Image 1 (tube, rainbow over the protein chains, first blue to last red):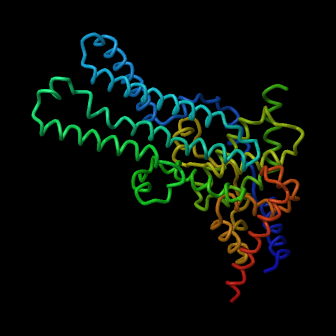
Image 2 (cartoon, each protein chain N blue to C red):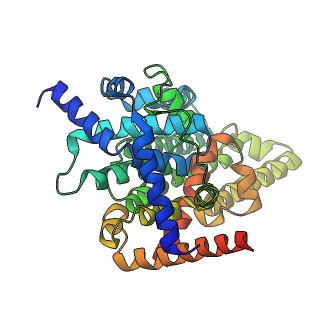
Image 3 (cartoon, one colour):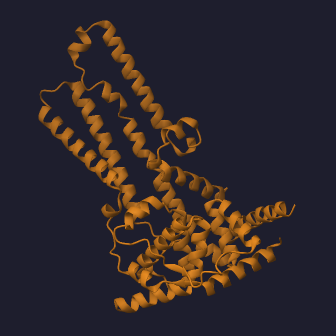
Length: 214
Length: 169
């Protein structure tokens, strides 16, 4: 079929729609009575719960650090401070992205709007990267100087190995969790849940949009 | 302008461009329930933007932008939860007669199948081409340069032609 035939076919389809399709004015008018929803109102309950849990967690850690500052082991303090800073950063990035996505202007040109939205959704990966970066401190917060200087050598060696392993994993994940690796098997496995579907779809969109630029 | 006037004007714009909304929803959602949800979501987004409509552009440009942007980033489950409490799943667009709306033309059915198979961005470009929008208008709606629009559309037309020739054979 030639281009002209395809266009003629589409035109007859459009004409058919014009005569057969009717606007239900009552249902459409109902939409005009919708209130503008806040970001909080459109968020999934599980996301709100996670966000609140995260905020409560950093508040709890902040209080713990302040109240135990004089008494706690330096291992605990440093681990807790690193943990709390990274969690705060992750929460900040997450909220910032949500606000920007919520404020997106859909009346702007399609490719630019989709590029912005897809880039924002994709940058949710930053939250994951920051959270993975905390891995090593979960192997150090309980340590104290006595454990390391007077404890059994084998335990010390195991401790050091575990911390090194967690550090290596954290750094590797931090460096490698990025858009360019989206087609790798480990990446697909890590982000296999349905809650990641919008992020994965956004990555595919981004790659389509980037093709336009090539 | 009071609320009733604004609502009336919105419904008139919607009525005049209902075909665009349906065609875009149909291209991005093949399943009837999804399509109904998408049409409702497009209408919600159009209403939300109505106050900020920029009169430098035609209504159709504004509608294409919002409808395509909504369709491309449409996540049905999220949307259902978002409006379920306020909006019953009612049809915004209905068939005036029940007999005549099925696409009886095999070629049209085939064309719609091809459109459905395309990637999101290519789908948007092909729809605009089929609507016989000028390259300048397509560039305005998509934000691509006119040269880029031309190149991309030639490529998509090539794919389309090839697909139709495969069927013929």
